[in-house]
Amino acid sequence: MSRPSVLSQRAVALQPSLTLAISARAKELQEAGRDICSLSAGEPDFDTPTFIVEAAIQALKDGLTRYGPAAGDPLLREAIAQKLSNENGVPSEPANVLVTNGGKQAIYNLFQVLLNPGDQVLIPGPYWLSYPEIARLAGAEPRIVGSSAETGFRLDLQALEAAITPRSRLLVLNTPGNPTGRVMERTELEALAEFLRRHPDLLVMSDEIYEALLEDGESHHSLAAVAPDLAERTFIVNGFAKGWAMTGWRLGYLAGRSDVIKAAAALQSQSTSNVCSFAQRGALAALEGSRDCVRAMASTYSSRRQLLSSGLQAIEGLTLVAPRGAFYAFPQLPEGVVDSMEFCRLALDEEGLALIPGEAFGDGRCIRLSCAVSHETISDGLQRLERLLDRLRD
Ligand SMILES: Cc1ncc(COP(=O)(O)O)c(C=O)c1O
Image (cartoon, rainbow, N blue to C red; front, side):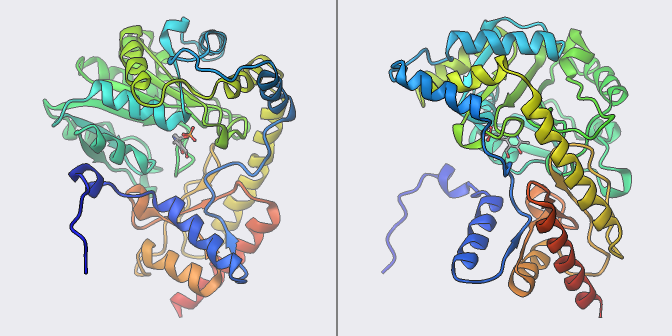
């Protein structure tokens, strides 16, 4: 007998994360004895650098086991403000910073305090799959502004102009991007800034969580630094998960004008309260310590990214816009082959290869592969992928 649902409309409408579901299914098959090669990971395969772990252990021993200020440890807020000022060129004070449970909560809090029901959030596609869901949770309507592999996944300002309505409230940026690995160029951000000046009511969220993971010769540019006149309406989301291999620590931050940060801190004080007190000391050590560990991991991702990119480029029929940052590649499947959902189902069932369908990121012609795995796993994955494509073409 089926029970009547007790769930709210909000809960019923929510899409669970497909990336987490696929990783879990791959793990299940592996535990059942299948030989699985997973290129689905969305997190570093490195351990958190030891000096960061030690700082958190020390904080625990020192008794940092109580509630702290909801907006974050003042020392950490100060260190983040300095990092934004000195490294990103975005002058900031502690009052401009909120420490959050990962970048995800920074986005959640921001959307909750900026958006009213019916507002539209402009999301350039392909996009990280949580943006539309978090927008819906705030009662807003995600409006996707697509781009494609054919145009190098560049943000199309004409399409953006066409998508804008009087209800458009917030534009989402993500550079370096998940899933494409695309890094926005300075000139592109300058052109976007011009566009934003013509739309003075549009706010911007700039998700820069992959900023440290770049190919040689690439630079990360923050919109608020490229166009300081837009800093008042630009909100930066960032965190420690990707650059410092700290996914499980749940440490991120939101930065922007102080009244919005204050509102987001009030929201946080009524939901999760402060981020784990001693974990914040780990993040403080990360910012105060040497960046050699980050550079070493970035350089490893770089050689893996090159292996993955050249392998994908060598496979007949795939179209790849070579990723320049983050740790993903997002090739387009050949015309006429099955869609990305079916392709990924076949890859897992027939080849034991875990991939993420592009459908999850708003482009059903593509698949996402991660290079946050060893060279051996990447090479193995490429062989399985090629075998499946050969079979599908026959
Ligand atoms: C583009 C992007 N933004 C934000 C996040 C959230 O990261 P965190 O683990 O800090 O919540 C992720 C995680 O995968 C991401 O890919």
